[in-house]
Amino acid sequence: MDVVIGADGVPRCAWGASTPDYAAYHDTEWGFPVSDDRRLFEKVCLEGFQSGLSWLTILRKRPAFRAAFAGFDHEVVAGFDERDVERLLGDAGIVRHRGKIEAAVTNAARARELVAEHGSIAAYVWSWEPAADGAGAAAAGPVAERTTSPEAVAMSKDLKRRGWRFVGPTTAYAFHQAMGLVNDHAAGCAAREEVAAARAAFTPPVSRAGSSRGGLGRSGPSGSSSGGGVSPGGAGARPPADRTG
Image (cartoon, rainbow, N blue to C red; front, side, top):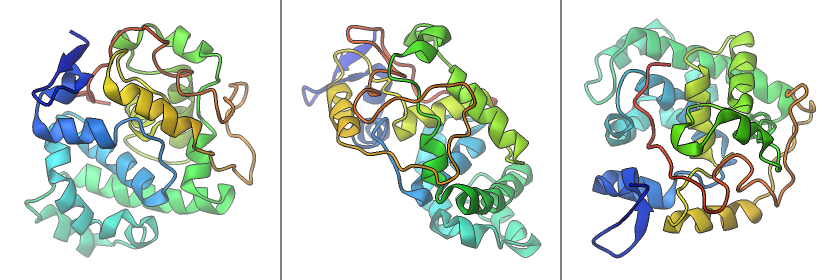
């Protein structure tokens, strides 16, 4: 079932109706466009920590992650040293995995380089928004079966080239879904139209370095709410995936 009517009468993607935590995340965050660098860096990090786990586990630990990682200020995290890594390994509120913790610190340093080149993390991220004609989404298959997209694959490859870690294509696509680069709310979900309206009113930041996308096209400000997601009347969305890469 793609859409579930909750006890409050609101139709939601089935995964968004499964727990109160998911409902709040689904209704107010997932798919709404984000241009705040801290939130974008936080999401990249948490997607990495999620690898092999459920998003619900990470969501419930998010306040502890924010406290442990200086509110995901990449400038601060880039300065973390071995003492900070040991501190984080002793923090029961987060996922205590040395590789993932060290990856977050590495990615913070790489984020600093992105900002120097593009002006902001957001400017880089939004340069990977799918084209308004939805060609990339169509190539990736029906949304209910989709775990990546040409844009996510290309962004993943570019980030890895820059030295980022835990940024595989599936992780990159989950990031695109959550941060509003695509609208994968199911047809009939109340949030789908809200996300589309938010995207229509949103002006993506522009990189001062130009696009990193090679031959991939980019949508205009008004056309992308369905470009990377479900076409009107399309299939329902997957939940934030439990994945390994």
